[in-house]
Length: 182
Image (cartoon, rainbow, N blue to C red; front, side, top):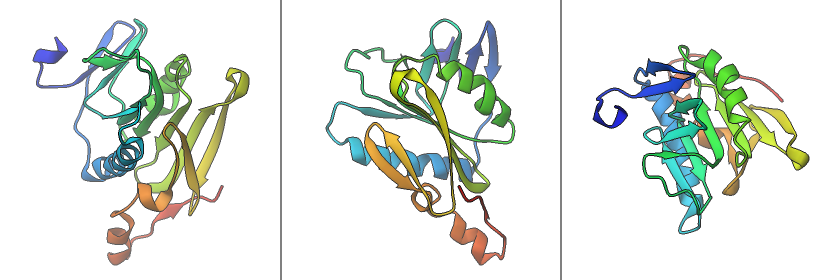
């Protein structure tokens, strides 16, 4: 059904949900992250995908993450991924509760996933859920001028890189730019 549809749909526990379009700000943030990850993987074994690539989590859910990185050579399906090492979601007002709760719980079930990065759209703030030794999950908050570590490819992105091209326009209109300090 999805290949023939002009609308993207996510599937969760037997229910199908149509996706709305994203804002220019949302796309800029996701694009900034994608571009830096794309450049970092180069000709290496990892592949970086945008929100047009589905992520299938067993038979329970199918999502369209904003950005995902797959480094598993056995990942050969051309319509969806199943083994990402990084998933990035840019929060939208209509989906933030899903990204912060439902997806977090399901993403934790992906054995290959090493980091789930949640990027706030309207403030310079990132939440990074990451898997450490012995499969334990931890959470880190990144704000202000901090750097966000990505495990695959191994690099750090500054919040200035993630929000490049966005904060200047707010400052020039005299609006405040929200920030938290870790």
